[in-house]
Image 1 (cartoon, rainbow, N blue to C red):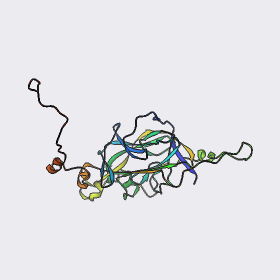
Image 2 (cartoon, one colour; image 1 turned 90 degrees about the vertical axis):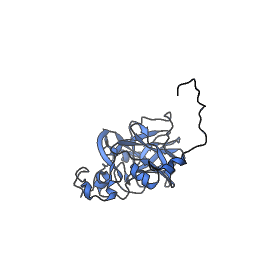
Image 3 (cartoon, one colour; image 1 turned 90 degrees about the horizontal axis):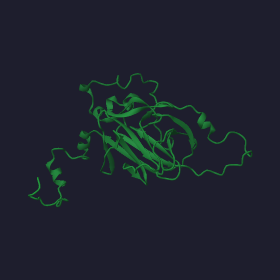
Length: 274
């Protein structure tokens, strides 16, 4: 299947960038970045978790370790971050990374020049709530696809018409936006705290301030089967404790589990201040 994909015009990171420490599959990686630092990841019951920091902006860093172009389908709360659609990973509009490149995506792409920042918030204040579907809040997923091998191009003059991919550049950028029935803004749709169900207080992602992030359409013909898939779950600390991902702060037994027989220290010296 041939379809247009998106590529950032200003890839700031290259193959010489520092190795990423985020979740990895076969060298491909995905990490959540808060205040310029990659958020710690916690493995529990076969899943990877990240703590959601309430009201804090975050970005998503993805990397391509290969010597070829790679397309990445990226979703937050079950929505494609480019157009907010729900599709299969194969059908999704994707980001395209060059060989050895990494990019940091700051938010929902709402035009060819602008994105609106991701930030952690409650489900009741989230973009998913505004769009009317909160079934997949608390999830971040990146699916990586290799490019199909291209057939040899005919010698110029043998075949008429435009070159492959020409139409893709001429297509307008689809903008992320709400269904036609949506009328209230995320802020206007907030329910009163007293009557909200518990699920409305769980972590989700909002649509925040605008930031410059110019993109362009390019052509990419991906393979049918993904090269790697990385999924993260995020919750506020309270829910991470409830799930058993993090120990309870007052759990003395959990503290004992961190005990060790030896420490890399020396005996106290009476001639040195303690």
